[in-house]
Length: 212
Image (cartoon, rainbow, N blue to C red; front, top):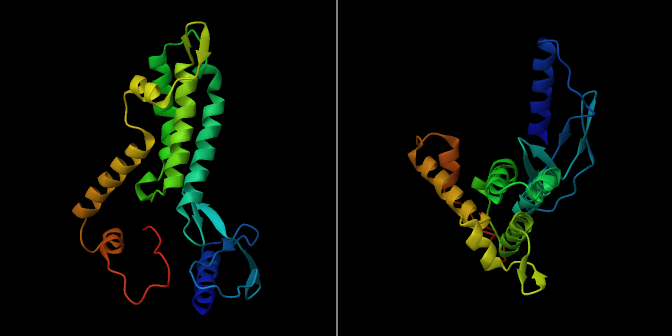
């Protein structure tokens, strides 16, 4: 906590020098790590008091204390779901061609979901959530099918045959490979490349290692 206190004091000093003041109500702190230590709910330095949080959104990405990728993906799905329900009347309109509905999905809904996907590490559960969300939209776009006198929902294979594009899981993998290509081409002294290619030191904890 000593380094955090020094950084806060330096920030407060620099802010006052240009006529600004730290907002204590909006400023929080979060401790990351695997070791379970007792952490106070408040952090005090000089006349200021800051509360602690377990997660926060930075540049549109949800960051948690344990770096839980599933929480990030669920947050993006929730945001994309809001975009979907805002456009649901258009997607189910019968006077709009399916081709244009797919364009709406790819330009207005999918980018909301895919933001920050370059750093996602997908588990089987995460892949299932992404597939279920996409198929929900595709079923809304293509609608049911009539066989004889009975209407039924389209099967997954029928949806992707009509969609004729990469599914979300494949798109995420392609996006990660594209980002890996950018990292390889970066200069060796850039932090992003150093972190990605660095080798972990020391002994890992007992149990299965986390995805990284």
